[in-house]
Image 1 (cartoon, one colour):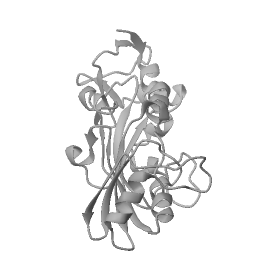
Image 2 (image 1 turned 135 degrees about the vertical axis):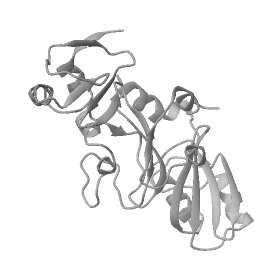
Image 3 (image 1 turned 30 degrees about the vertical axis):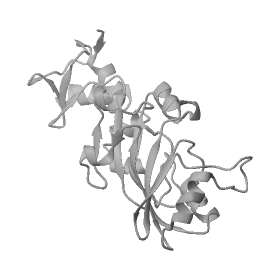
Length: 238
């Protein structure tokens, strides 16, 4: 448990500079337990602390771990170039506290995207050494065939990779739809593997990471939620 002054608390939660946070407090915009606090030097225990700012209730979090059901035409970048960034789908304070996508989805790829401001967590989730399976549903231009599934399972050669890349598992879901599970996380991997196998990916959605599924989160496209401890544990390799 630790105590912090209220201005430091607000700054750590992404509400702006220390000076701006002090002004918010002195202007009566912040309350704790229903009581307005106007002294920015007042100190509070951050354990299980909730505060109200601009009439919204927030809980103090040392780090933020969220999952977003990413829509198409958003870039997984803090400095997007051609489309809006995914941070525009989230409360503004997440930008101030330097929330980052954990890995990337192409602008036209939808589905599960983890985001955090915890560097070690981001590194651990992104590390290929951890072999965290990621499950994708791909819509293909040409029909899915047993031969296509076999190629993806056996491995296909991409022009800039030293060895063939293979799906961990792959199965047909429909005439033009398949589920593919990967561990490597290479650039445009699903799309490039399908192209190398003689097909074309016309739509792609990530539906699970580790044992955490998008279906279990019940998020509409563009919606997000904080991850619980139990959900974070599901992100580990099986």
